[in-house]
Length: 174
Image (tube, rainbow, N blue to C red; front, side):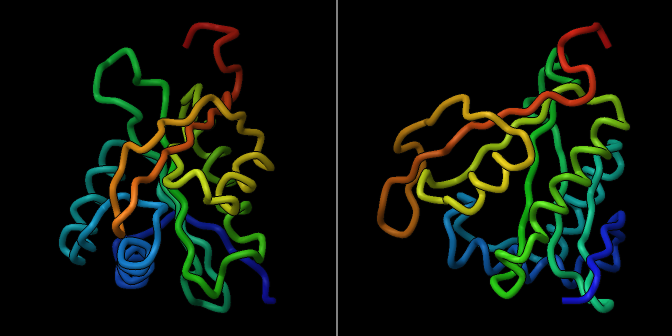
């Protein structure tokens, strides 16, 4: 495999990002969305996150987007402002090649550089061993499971909660 370049996503990348997410929505349980968002909606989401100062990254191999990751607000209340929730998505052909871990580690570094102190992973489907494994390798710890909170593809799904401190974490005040 060629070298993996991780860089900040741009609006031009959304034409490659949108079908990656579309596939995840239509075929997987990593996201609990039921209808894939349009390019216009993905653009609005990208603009909102980027405009608010959250990191949004792409993995590029041979000039093509091979996955993306971003951090966003964990919860809207102001006391949560130092905590982010992460998302990482790869097309099927890019999975199990180390791209997700590289994206996640870069997202952690970028989130730390922006002053965030905690990162939460809300992993759709407790059977999602790939995502749980990648987060574990990136230093996340299991903090709990919300059982049967989503319903997709005719079955109930759990969400797995994992957490990782960023930078000094809670050892100092921001």
